[in-house]
Length: 135
Length: 150
Image (cartoon, rainbow over the protein chains, first blue to last red):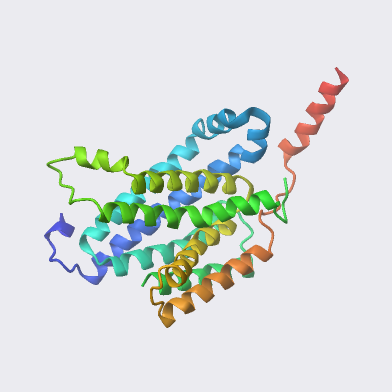
């Protein structure tokens, strides 16, 4: 309600909240999808054993996969909502670049990936690079 | 399953991840800008748009992206695959410069260099986090030996 009642240019906190919602939903979606694919196993091997149908069945019978897709869809609609209120030149680079860093943090915390100095550096470099390219 | 270096086929899948998403978005954008304005009063025109060549190609490329992205996540870490998705932005920027002859600002060149460096850093390391063999890993060979004994 509050968001609709604001003027064409929402305040800094409202804009931050909208971008944070996109980043949070996107990170949840990516991490859940990655967890789903790790629980399923190597899709190339599954396809070699059971064919393409077997690989598709393995994916669509995994509940984690649908949880991931749900959050990715939520991120998409949150992005549309943010674009309705904020400039594309702010929302697109900010959400795309911040998602890379939050994904690295979430992958370390929840997927227990070995995010070493090389990967941290890559996340920061790509984050700034995406911002510069999209801005 | 390789824990360190990837097979050429797996690099190909990462290449598809990089290139399919930006090309798909570009096709959708091109298709939609050439369409007459779509209003909620005529939702049928949105469905008809799906069958135009540019939009159909864009959707096919985005399906290809999602399939290759899921495949990559099944044998590589999320923090290894994500920089590959960002590398697509570099490909689009280079295509716009050398194919469409659009001007690329200094800030964008800096972005291209940073993303390329970031992807280079990740690509030099292992693609998958090594996990200690758990009880399931130990149980699997035992079961196989049992089956062989039968």
